[in-house]
Length: 190
Image (cartoon, rainbow, N blue to C red; front, side):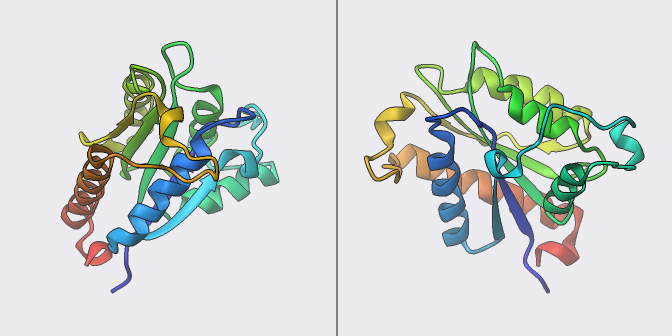
């Protein structure tokens, strides 16, 4: 049987962002976890404009190539992890926009979150994201990775100095994503 595909989405496009470092770190942890085939999608590289599709995403009648390309990245994934900062007590616009572009591609996929920020560690962004992802019929897992004082965890070379709680949380989330996949689609997760 094939291994389930995990898409790790870096949800910030801001210059100087830390998200790419946490996205790469989590993708590496997920690869080492050895349950998933892992793909990293950086929204900077995806390059979506603000939602410009004339039809409702539920229709799946995409007229723009960037939407078809984004769909081709998301659709084959079995589970998703969204890496998100917290801006002004909420999620960033780029990640919300990327979610809004699609519909069918998200449905029934388990989703986890890696959040980062200051003292609140991005947790308020995750609270908002849970409301959004459940609306597109994703299944959020309880286990998250929350990184307070995120800049302190990024070394000069861009690698992440993960604390033991970060690693524990990452493995718990990966285990929960795999468990949900095994319950909902045994032929995919075996």
